[in-house]
Image (cartoon, rainbow, N blue to C red; front, side):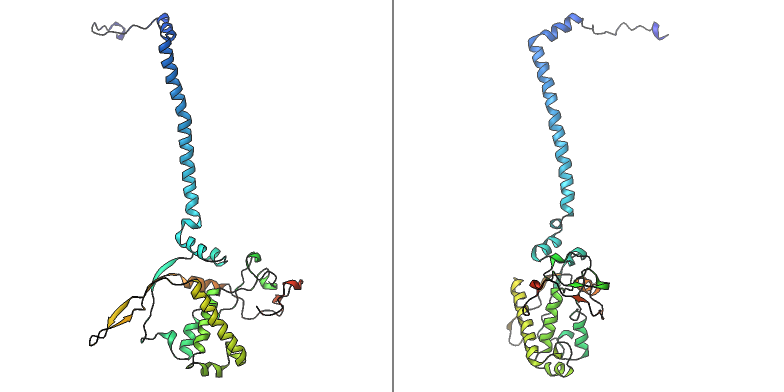
Length: 283
């Protein structure tokens, strides 16, 4: 039935003869245009391929960049401003905004006179933490290259988180204040087990360590002033300032979790065989 269908209005284009096609190709201008078109199309493939490769590499580089320390501003800032520490391998250091308590007359527990309550507050900061043991760490990253802990602490070396040592020093200065000194001197604990000459060296050591630390990390914040006393308005510095602080508690928790046990074996430390690494005096 379909074969008998006819439509007089339908017109078909004539198929060119082979000779006509040959004439088209043999025409110099037509051949040149065809060749140019083919070359343009062919030249686009390398560009497209390079674009794909570049896009892929950019994506991979972006992913890699995000995984690097400088991809995280907190980690980058910490590594840029601190020496190598095993803490950085285990602890995610972050920063938070903290308003300092700079009150002159309103004391907190850390400012109380000597006694069990204030001692407990300072102890909670980690001032009495024992040396930590960075087990399975490469000892080359520490100055204590030759000291080795033995037995249950094999391949570990004693070390201390400097920030906690700074707090220990600040606590000793607190204990040595004229209105606290007699209390701690009579108890004869901690630094006060030593005679007064050694205690004096200990206190002055701590004083100078804190001086150097404060100068090293000099705070560039600005103390503004406020008016107080409505009867006679007087200008006074506002010490309750905001600061960008590292998350202290995670560092303290890390140090406490890795500290040496309360009791250690007698051969806890093994002196080096090579005495060239032994100091002639206390550094």
